[in-house]
Image (cartoon, rainbow over all chains, first blue to last red; front, top):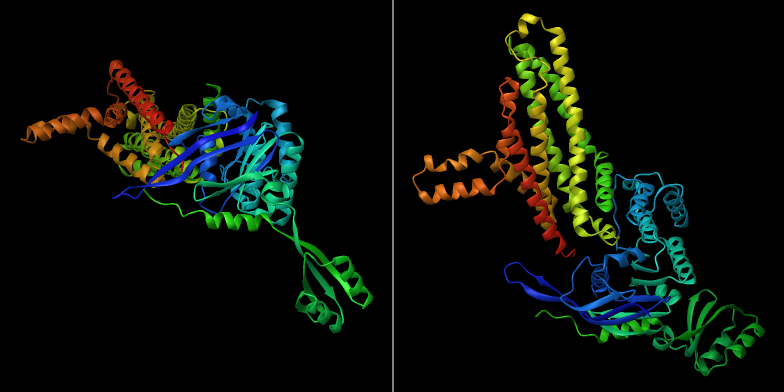
Length: 315
Length: 268
C-alpha cells in the first residue's frame, strides 16, 4: 500500500489587493510514496514544497485534487494519530519548557502519567536536549528549537513522518544526527517524507526523490534511476610529484591544476587507468592525497531539471 | 471534550507565565492600594472611593488582560507559526478554538479572584481603622453585594475575550485584532445612546442605523452595575440573570462564528 497518494493536487493563491491575480503555488502534483521508504522532496526555495506539506497536514485546503495518507483522506483526523510533522522553522510556546511542550502534545495523543513522562524523557534524550529539558523555550537557539520540533514530530511513534527542511538551522554535527535519526526511523519501518533543498543530505539518506520546480513535479524516481552510477573520470590529488611526471601526464590527456606548493589536482578521463597512474606517482617519489571517481551527481540532475522548468506564471 | 480541556489547560499554563499578565495584575494591585491614600484625602467619602476605584481597576485591568493575552489566542499563534504543529495533531479546529477560549477565561477568572481578594483586604482594613461614626449611613465596607459587581465584570470580560477571539481568527495581525476588540468595547459602552439616537437626531435613517447598531454590537454597558453595588442600591435578580444570559448567548454566537471562519482558513 502507498503511504502517500497525491492526485492532481493544486493550490492557487490570490495575490494583490487592488488587482488580485491568481498565483499557482502547486500545479497538479501527482505523486506516490511507498511505505517504509525515505522520500526526499526536493526543490529550490519557493518551489511549492512547504505548500504541499501544508496541504497534506490540512493547514491549507487544495484548490483542486485529492490526497490520501495511509489510505485515508487527509481531512480524516484519525490519521493524524499515526503521523508526525515537523514544520519549517518551528516555533513553539515560549513560556513553556521543552518537557512541558512535549507533555502537552503527548496528552493530545492520549498518553498519560508515567508512560507520557517516559516518552517525553526518551525523546528529549534522543534529540540531545536532555540537559535543557526544563529551560523555557524562549531561551532556546534556532537549532535547539529544531530539535524540539523533531522530538514533537515523533511523540506518537508515527508510522509516517513529514519533515519540512529538518536540517535547517542545524550545525554539521546536528545535521549528521538528524541523518542518523532518519535512517534509524527507516530501519524501524517508519516512512519518512522530507523536504529539503540540500541535495547532499537527500543523496545520503533517500531511497527515492521527487524534484519540484515552479510548483510542478519535474522528476521522481529512485536515486539509481535518476543518477546512475556511471564514472566519467577521476579526480586525483598528489603531493611531491616530479615536474617531469606531471608534464608527461598532461601530455597523456590529464588536466593538471596546482593547489599549493607541491600539491596538484589531476583530472583524468574515464579511459585512464588510475591504478597505473597511482603506481607511477608512488614510484617517482610522490604521495597520493586522494583519488575519487567523477560521476553525475544529484546536484547536476537537479540543476538541469530546475533550469528546464519554465518559470511559474500568473493567470 | 478531552482535547478542549487539554488545550484550555495549556493556554492557562502558558498565560499565567506571561510577564505582561504579572505587570497588569501588579499595576491593578498597586492602584487598589493607592486608592486607600486617595480615600484619606476626601473626608467622609473614603470607603466609597475605594470601592469605586477598586471595581474600576478590576474592570480596566481585566480588559487589558483580555486584550493583550486574548489577541495572542490565535493571531499570535498564526503569526509565529506555533499553530502548525498543534493542528497536525489529532485535534479538530473547533476543539482548538473552544479550548483556547476556555483557557483564557480561566486565566481571567483567577486574576479576578486575586484582585477581588486584594480589594476586600483593603476594604477590611478600612473598616478596622475607621470609626463607626465615619461609616454610619453607608453600606458596610466589606459589603458582599460588591461581589455582584465583580461577577458582572467577569461576564463582561468573558464577552470581550470572545470578541478578541473572533477578530483573531481571521486577522493574522495581533495588533489589528487588539485595535478592533478595543474599538468594539468602546462602541459597546454607548449601547443606550445608540438606542435613543432617534431622540437627538431628526434623520430617521440615522436613528434606524443607531438602533440597528444597538442590537448588533455587544452591549457592554449592560454589565456595568458598579454604581449600584457601591451605593448599596438594589439590583433585580431578573436583570442580573438576563444580562448574564445575554453575555453567554452573545459569546456563544461569536465563538460559533470564529469556529466557522477558522475551520475554513488557510495558514499560508
